[in-house]
Image (cartoon, rainbow over all chains, first blue to last red; front, side):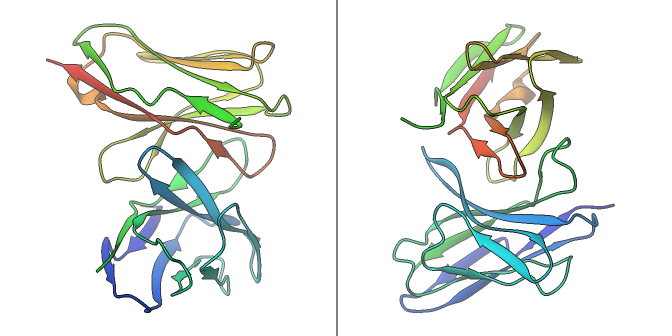
Length: 112
Length: 109
């Protein structure tokens, strides 16, 4: 079955540590996205990539970094510069604007 | 003012009721409108998609878009306890979607 796989499901980060969230898709979609979801704030766009080796900042990119070396993969690194990283992170992809996003199952990141 | 406004709820209804969920928006350039359902601790799943104005029906779900009023709605007929979830509206003019904050719905058996 085609879909988006996010791992890990739960992640704990210590203060000052960088962590990387994985996102892999086998849908052959060109565009991929990272969103952050906080209670009462909806989904906020962190980064997106429309083609391999190219990506753009979203609305809340500070403290995050991404890469897009392969069409199937779009990992997100939460750096120590992100002061409030505890949230639910969602990866999505899209083939055509007519069909909307396909989302992964999410990674819940907690600072300990 | 946010680009997309959505009442966060929670909204509690008895089983079998008709549910109406709504979003308003400010950007008249939006052309693509979607509704997603999100169960707790899961990723959102696409429920309904509408291009431009009009209605779309799929089983118990009907999506309406009124571009003149900048208002979209999702109706759920014969609501079931399994419909209990958060419903997110989303809209776009291009590849980048703007999401509402979501409305939490609880259908009571």
